[in-house]
Length: 341
Ligand SMILES: [Zn+2]
Image (cartoon, rainbow, N blue to C red):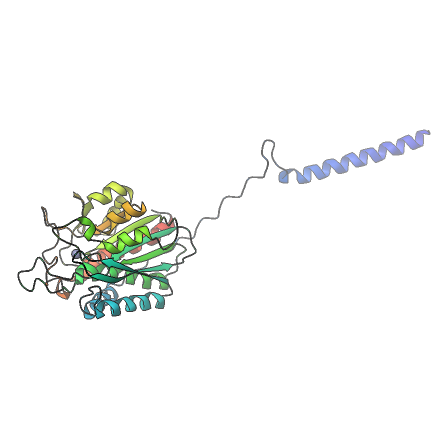
């Protein structure tokens, strides 16, 4: 072995070591840190917030009028059938995917109703969803009236107002894209119950839906029911069952309404529980749903004076009330996406 040979070997070793250390220094920022298996993920890009669209109250008003023009939407009547077809056509026109859930319901007086719950889905593939619901049928008799007690009512407020707000929200979603799932659910046969009978004689559509969900294990992020949301002098109080099942949703809605200037409609006072679709949705499907329902009066009959009377017609409908509810719900949907709520 010669000196020359060993010197050149040493040179190779030195050059090799230099190369390895250069590669290591170059790669070091990309190598895993000691104690972690994978490099840390980059922070998620902030979501681009979307503006809250204006709720078009003139359009909502026309939707109330349109329903009333069909005549009372009592199950098994031609008006009921025509109105259901109209809803379906409208939702489809706005690009929503519609499920008509047909079912038979037995009235407490014995009649079998051909009934239909209508479920309109905005962005049906998105897992995070908000459920907005209302009943669309109108009552078969004017029990509380002085005259024509056995004749059906127009149900401009009790039925048509909530459905109109939902339709207008469908139209708004179609025109103002948001990456959030929204389900608009119209319950049938809510208002054909027995005033002197069991609470189960009411809300037959929501009772059916709760046991036959349109998709298995359906659980929305938030669920809100609207009932009697269009009359002059409406007052929405914090209803008892809503406060029991979803107080956080109640708080969000009432404080949002107040921040939008509708604090005179959304009054932060408690009111005792009311038998309405949300009760059966909570009981039957375990979905915590709140009820926005006008109860301007205290005592046994908290509803407006037109309730279950013939005066529940277009003359009680007030655009200011529809605006307060419609704009609050629109803001609720878009602010939920924005991560503000
Ligand atoms: Zn009613």
